[in-house]
Amino acid sequence: MTADHPATAAHEIRGYLTYTDHGDSPYWQWGKVIEAFNGGRKEINVDLDGERWVVSVGYQVGGLEPRPSDAVDGNLREYRVTAHGEEERKLPLLIQPRLDWSSKRRPQSVPSDLGLATNVKLEQCVNLDPDEIENLIPRMMSAIATKAGVDWHPDYLTGTPHEYSRCTQYERYLRANREYARKIVRSDGIFHRLFHLLADQEGSKIVFSADNRDVVGYNHQLQLPTRAVSEMFPDGTRHGMQLKHYHPEHVRKDEKTDDGELDPLYHPKLGALFKKGLNDGAHPWNEIDDLTQELEETLINVLEWAEIPTKGSGSFVSDWHFDANERSELDVALFDDPTPAVEASQESVLISTMTRLSNRDQDILEGVAMTDGGSTHVDELADETDWSTSTVYRALRKLGDLLENENGNVSFISQKIRDRVNELVDQLDETVEATTRIIEDTLQVDPRDLERKGRAWQNWLTRYGAELIRDGEQPTENAKIRVREILNTYKSVSYDNVGEVLEYGRISWIKAGRDPATFDDAIVVFDVGNGNTMSGKASRLIEQYAPG
Image (cartoon, rainbow, N blue to C red; front, side, top):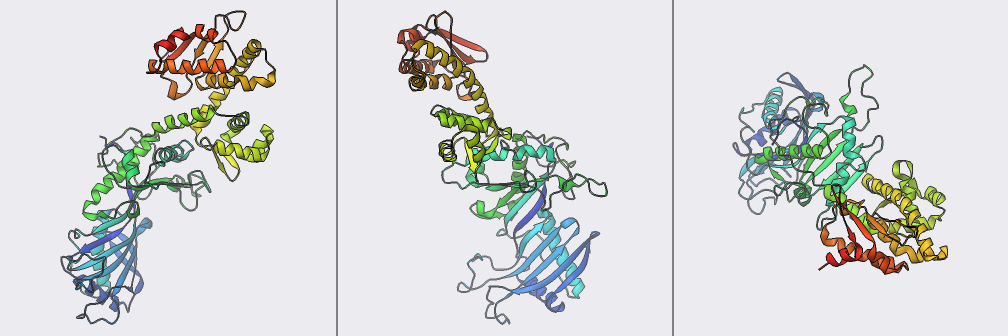
């Protein structure tokens, strides 16, 4: 557990607070306030604790019917209160009646046992914490009623909201230094890794969108339903949420303003957003503190997984609502990064794909790997590899597990895959040259037959990072085979599968037209991890460690 991290700040909240202590009286009394303003008024100045708020009030005709005893023509009114505070704080409210309707008239959205109440809908409160919202509502309405010259009971809309009150949307954020934040949205960043980890979950709808319009990370969003978030954290069921990395609409090009002041908006926000639509329903307002804890815990863990330091304030930038130097009062749990499985999965895909490449496929894969930045256009790839554009497109369909093709722009699905392919290309350059020379010498075949007869052996060498070492004048004398595991999946080869690997190699050797006795007598040296090796004659190792 740790609390040595900045406290996150509330960005936006939606929901509704239902008050029952005074029944429907606050609703009807507020109607008198609106009447005193002749149906509405703009730019009402209100001062609360030294903060200036500019308020507009009005009404709309809602969809709820009055009771027969209500002296109302048509549907009931709903009253709007929109208050704008300093530094973009906003409190927009909709005051609605809850009138204990009979079963025939009661709206389906109103619980049958609610009784008389006044509902305050939070339209989209901005830069206000939940407790601030509860505190501001009665004080704001009392101040406005005073301006209208209408009596307002000081206890209206105070106290604890009814248990039916709900939060439907809630985002908390912190502002990360732009240099650090790039780790989150780069091609092998935590958003991409989480998407690749969770996207193949059956029954889950996971959406990742990346908008790099004006700057990398302009607006990246990862929508994760409940099941996906619970997969990230091993401590039980969690809420579905949306992870966000975003800049303001007009991206700042400089860290300082024209006046030479530091501009916090140069740096992006990292947000965690609870949404009703990503869950089974809205969240109880009386448990809002638990949701605050969960949102903050998610943000801190995502930063940790992105290898962005969360202790201290060096990774963060203060703005008008987020204080990088304010320590959180919440103790959040830190969990292990769940995404290393992505690397293993991607390398497994790489292995299976590389072992079935044709010359065309290999040329195109190497062509993308060798480009600056790991991205190129199909036309450039065709020119580079001398394959036709249509052939390149066919190859890209086969290489879809490794390469992305967006409108003709080709790149690797991740930086990790690109790095691994580059390693493999270097290995192949050395191995192919040596192996081709050996096979030519041994088989004395026409070069046109070399690929056909040597393909199986070459595939085995490639898959296990192996090489055939000459110890004598003739390549078949005193043969030694060195197996170097160059992919994570095979870095720790267990003794249990040594026999299987060598049996596959023997079959490949024979398919290449070579004498099986030479392979059987060859000394095989295996890298088994941590600088250790094991060795022995191929035939004995096959017999000793044969599967089953």
